[in-house]
Length: 401
Figure 1 (spheres, rainbow, N blue to C red):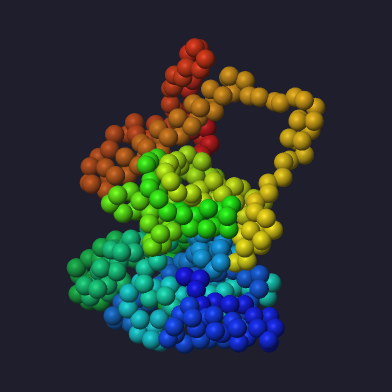
Figure 2 (figure 1 turned 135 degrees about the vertical axis):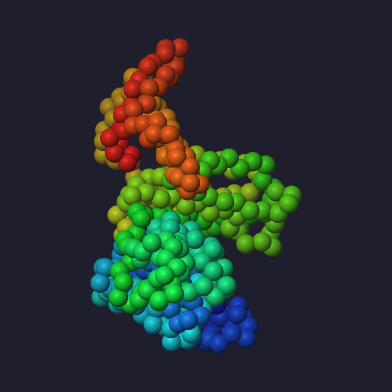
């Protein structure tokens, strides 16, 4: 990724850029394309079977890139209006049908927000590493769906696809025999996305040195999955990242009912993630990156991160309030009661989330889970500075106590 691409803004640079591209991708055809500045990288996740059925499983926004390499992915895309996004999905499905595509695939676009136009980049005929973003917002297991497509099962008989289109997970035998189990995907509405998901690639790079790749051993990775954050890491059998490997060795996925909650869950996960070893990682850099106002307000494009790097890196200006506190010589610190209340809320949230996950797991196994797993009131005891506190936390919302 990122190789064989050069921007040319004056005619005399064409020959030099052409030679560079030829050297990076020998034997490949070379395309000349219109430059789309201040654009988004939006992509549609496709799934198609051998019977001519093709559907769009929503999509992803992969606009945070460093030298054309994705750093952060998220979904569903919210930069394009629902009307324009529907056009992009329909165009991707039409392309898959026109070429007789079978399998999971991704149609990638550049999307220009000012004029609401989108430009085709490619149809990526494989499963991409960020596919869990789509799985979290559609609840369709893409590797399992690929296997079922390869077995000759039509899309409308894949249980998770049926649920995505508001149908029973399994069709009745009678409906299958008389053809009533068939779903016309061109007219059947897909149910809305399940919240929002943000993914961050963990790479062995030194962000302060222009994202220079690093290599070496890893002594410890401390990461804890939660109901809202999931991740994976991979390295060789010796626990090392060698210089011939891709710099990415981990991927984190944070979900939430909306983009802001997913972002906050990711911030917390990155701050809790600990990687100890001989390598440098982008963890601290990205944890600051996603707290910048531009990212919070979703005011980004494919050149956003490169501009930050060119301007000297991340600079987070202190707020006016914090400057006033420092200048006055007074620092407002939380008292013990407040600290205990915050700690109890975090513990109660973890308990509720864990019990909910257990409740759903038991239901999936066909077992009747105990109702106390859904208890919204938690009695807790915490000790701070030698003082025992007894608290009762009552849950009043998804993430409110």
